[in-house]
Length: 124
Image 1 (cartoon, rainbow, N blue to C red):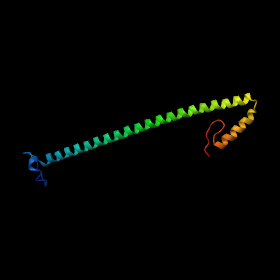
Image 2 (image 1 turned 90 degrees about the vertical axis):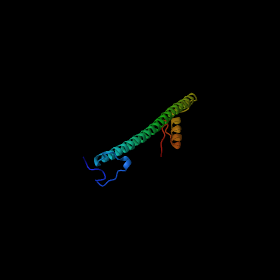
Image 3 (image 1 turned 45 degrees about the horizontal axis):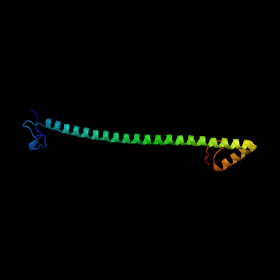
């Protein structure tokens, strides 16, 4: 029979002692308690990280949705701008205006506003 926990210098409360408790069984009991505590901490950490991942996914989905909506709006505005330009050129042609001069005027005005004649924005 092995040494009792008391014989090894430890103390086991009387209510927790079995008739044949030894230092080895007490050490096993402590190891089991430590393992349960570790498993609980790991489970809590997995739950925390899962919640973080869910939040990150929601944020990413929101960003993607906003990105696609913005791109759709840019495409719609670009098409509307092209229609307006086509109308200006058509009217200028119908009125007999010099189209090359019109290109120069539009390019000059666009340069002043920071937009190229092709509708591209330029940051200065």
